[in-house]
Amino acid sequence: MTGLPDLPLSPDDRETYRAVATGGETPAGHDVGRLVSLGLIAPNPDRDGQYIAHDPRGAVQQALAQVQKTITRAAQCMAELPAMEGLTAAYDAHRWYSGLSELLETRDEMNARIAQALRTASSEMWTAQPGAPVDRDPEVQRAGMERVLDLRGRGISVRSLYNVAVRDHATTAGHLAAAVEAGAEIATLEEAFPRLVIIDGHHLFIDNCVPGGRDKDAGWHVTDRATVAWAHTVYQHMWARATRWQDGDVSSEMLTERQKAILRALEEGEPQHGVGPRLGLSDRTVTKEIAAARAAVGAQTVYQLMAWWGRQQAEA
Image: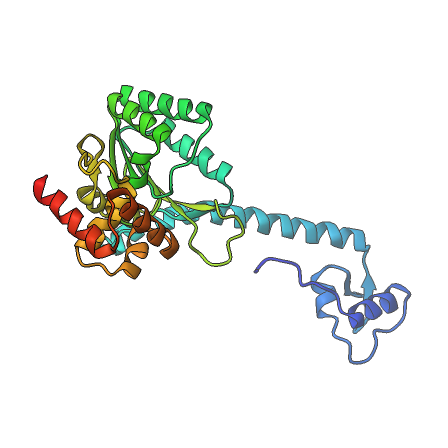
């Protein structure tokens, strides 16, 4: 960087300074220019071609002053860079650049960041939870209900999309029914879908799909405007295909919601090996659920099961 002292000293520079300081001649072929510029030596006014040594401590102070001046100027330049970047709007007015993506490496980090975004939320919280239902700690469910009540009390739209299997999980079903009573919108989807949280159309939280992640609960906080808007549109498409909680299928009570979802997929022409990927289930689970459905309705084969299913749909 211009303005900085001409350092470091070379072995020849050190040898030359020691020779001058002890009253000797400058070594033949050694350049004295760096030593003169640093103030370590100066031409001897009484003897042409010879030099006198100066106190290195004075040269150090002079060099230090130069460095400090350069650092101060560099800091001033750094402070002006945002103003320069702001001119981009005039040069490239038709383009938008906004936001970033940040990896949050643990579940606690994800939850803390979501909670932070919710504290300033003003319009919506939309979530998609594709996982199978589990027995949750009552305190966790209580906290979730308090969050729903708080958000609805602030006039914030709350939408939650779940795996259809939650309808057969008594504890979760009770919790979601209470959330609907509190004003939340709940729906279930039979097909596989991604986990995500959207807050106010400005914050998107998604799973970490980048290879090499260490923690399976790691995720990304995305604030890029275009990406969040895209996820918002995807969510609306998923929601349009989902079934509202209060409109859940009440026919064919001998079957679970998961079994009904499998039969609907088969009814629509999906081969059995394609049902699992569509619903986010393993092939083994699909086979077990079809066997359970056959046993429930007294069918000996899948063909008999589908015939029974077709009659149920015709009568509905």
